[in-house]
Image (cartoon, helix red, strand yellow):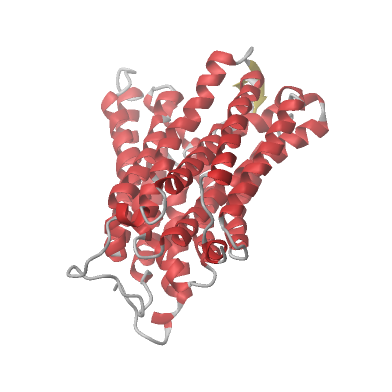
Length: 448
């Protein structure tokens, strides 16, 4: 089912690329709903939230690693890779539910002793197994979309990758509502089954155009290093690093998003603002990538993302915005704008990287090269949140208590303000890389 026949639905780019891409990405993107279940899981199995949260960090790490190591599998057979993604993602969700149940029985039904076995099982299920599903599922439709939409590659990849960002906006309220009516483990069983069906349909539909020819086993195909060396290696290093830095900065801020909304004084609107930020995340994925289709050099989009992020971060730093937001509505709005800009730039960075890479290195090995580049996501998935946590712990001021939905939440405005000092420096470094290390690509390179 790698290729399609001519005519009819089998040659329809929406049925064979766009719809399956959305089905796959709207499923695996729910990994970002972790914060909506982590507190409940921690209380049920008897561990601290900070300990349980390593499941999410591991999921992002193995997303990047599996994309890097399985990129060649995706390159050779998207049918096999999308099936691997379907099975691993669904199995990881169901496995998470099983180990949550085990931990609940041990902690609440036993002697009140947390189960280390249950915690390790959650790490393996949500972190490793789901992580493999995430990496292969993320990669599988991307090259296919670019092949079907040759003239609007950015729009096509942005559409699917926007599904990854929109999954949080769709999944979070569903998960919160389900937890009101059933145990968390049952929720994972149901969602695992639903996402298996969605992804399996996507797997069946996904196919490359009939006129695209992948080299057979007897044909000589250049290695990844040979392809990358067609340009100075500093070019690829620059792309990898600016991708890594954008994700690191984004996660450092987004990981404290709810606390930032509450700190600004919009306590009653925190949930609504969270949904709006998810829309900006998805909108950045689609909007920035579609916009890049009209540009001579797609790297221009990254320059714009970094400049916008630098400007709004600097505004919040100059006004001491996070600390002063509660007492000044205008400053509070600036902080909210920063969060939305960061979300849009974070999403836009994801959707533009495969098309930027294809402009530089062609379509022949794009899945493998994109997979290696996604390793930056895996490392940033740990670096961003851990950087923010380190700064708050060692450089934060006094902890404040704010009531949120009838419960007291601890926040650290000074610590969160100081996170921005680090992200500002990193955004500036990313901009310099974009300006001086990453070469012109696409139409800009052709017209030199």
